[in-house]
Image (cartoon, rainbow, N blue to C red; front, side, top):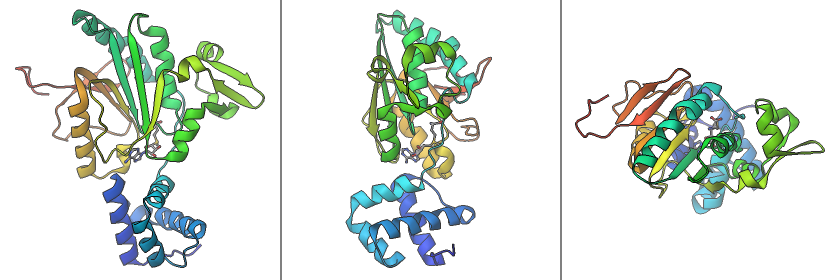
Length: 278
Ligand SMILES: C[S@@+](CC[C@H](N)C(=O)[O-])C[C@H]1O[C@@H](n2cnc3c(N)ncnc32)[C@H](O)[C@@H]1O
């Protein structure tokens, strides 16, 4: 299909999307934006791009739909298994020891950019089993894509998506149905699914474990830095950040220390209390 975006229109829409979400469209992925806009024009019955632009400026719901349409929601259960080993064998024992010492037996986790839910459910399985029973657990999972959030809330996955879930978790926490698997209520009830755009403040506080994997890869450097700085502010004093496999804070001037475990690389919030700067 031929493109519909003239150069000035491409700049107009890529700037708009960037300002609204941090998602950066370069010339290289211009055709993706073009295709998504063609779809939105058709659905909203707009004659041309100019007309659609005027429409979207008057219609915040359509802005959400456009942003949703340009996101990539690819995910899977236990994606990057090394990080789940790190969660179970390094982060949790360390956090439990710290929280026990300060007499605050609770853990708050945020899966930011959770897509269709496989990531927060994977986290929930591990924490359900490994967190001491007397600890309070709160998992918040959020995304910019309303469609993805709806799927996540439902917690129903076709057989093809289940691959990667370790057998014991599958047996304990899913109900087999005719053509797929339903996550059980005892797991669903641990997670609060919310719409949230990482461009804005989350209103969260004291987050102990933050997963934001394969999200900032779509942002430019300025937007990445802004998100990471916002994360730092809402994380607890003794907390951990998980980023995606191809995302790194290396070379970025942040207040996170690099932690290499036997299984993966993660980041620890660094507080300037005399400790050596990372
Ligand atoms: C590739 S998925 C990653 C899912 C999961 N974290 C993982 O690693 O498997 C990226 C997700 O980030 C979300 N996203 C992109 N920009 C966002 C923003 N500004 N605010 C919140 N979520 C965003 C997308 O909607 C998408 O669902």
